[in-house]
Amino acid sequence: MKLSLLVCLTLALSACSSEKPQDPETHERIQAFKSILNAFEPLGLMVREKQPFDPIRFAELAGQLKEESRKPFAHFTAPPTGGSKSKPEIWSEPARFAEMRDSFHERADRLAAAAGKPGLRLADVSPAYGQLAQSCKSCHDAFRRTVSE
Ligand code: ASC
Image (cartoon, rainbow, N blue to C red; front, side, top):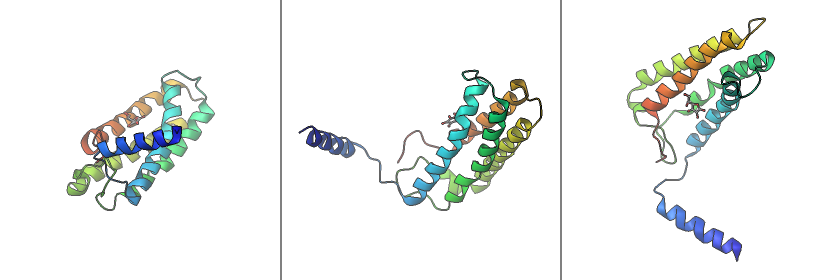
């Protein structure tokens, strides 16, 4: 009884949504962006002083973020057929997209380099973290929709 109610509700809600099923490349891309967040979020907690600053862990996470930061960009080969927030400008303005991608990678590299210094304090890395976060935001503002299509 409860299960059939849940099935009905799920079907009713999906009928309301115009979202198309996610294509395989979109799925890969989203997974890769989530792997970046797995490093970005705990770094942010330390930068915002919600968690104690642990320089060893900060450097590990910044190294992980640097490595993960490259991965989503292998999964932008073709415009999505569904379930994606990617704007068509990614494919119609590739030079502008590539510039933002490269800037993101430079900032991820700079954060990892800053985090690798001995005797690290929060003040040594928070500006580089802020610049990286700004890079995420600028690219999302330019190239990401607020809802999937
Ligand atoms: C996040 C998230 C983003 C970025 C961005 C940083 O946690 O999901 O898209 O940070 O807001 O400015």
